[in-house]
Amino acid sequence: MRHRSRIVPALSLALAAPALLGATAAAPLGQVSASVTGLRSTKGQVLACLTDSTKAFPGCERDPAARTLIVPASAPLELDFGPVPAGTYAISLVHDENGNGKLDKRLIVPAEGFGFSRNAPVRFGPPSFKSAAFRVDGGEAHQAIRMRYLF
Image (cartoon, rainbow, N blue to C red; front, side, top):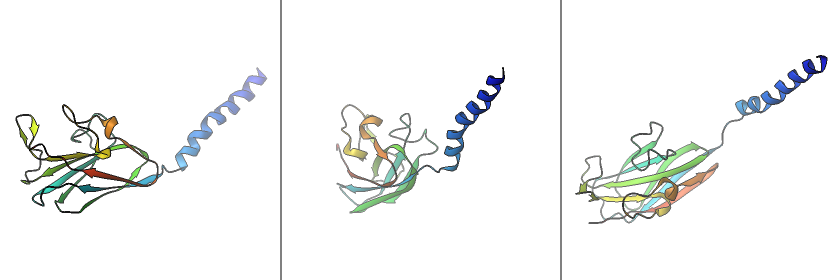
């Protein structure tokens, strides 16, 4: 019984040590930015979204922690999402040419421009989070995104 009483406090301390160390160490922050090319006009605005949620991508409406930007369309266009905790993120863009705050469609096909981090391929619908995802581990995380138009 005496051995047990010595082992339990030592084991408790060993298990608690990583949690105590993690509580004092801050997660590294990375600066996320993007350059946007291929805008067909400077009409309207660009709606940008940065998310780490696979379920919210590409629209970000379901991610309250998503970083969103609304900037006037211009060439060249640089976006700064600011510092974010280390993790895996994806960016989606919409060239909202008429300024109504959403991606307009003709039937089910986008009538306005769109773009994704890593220039993720678009096939039958938007790309998956995985195909647009990039890692932020501190430092600068920059994406070069080309806008695409179907009409």
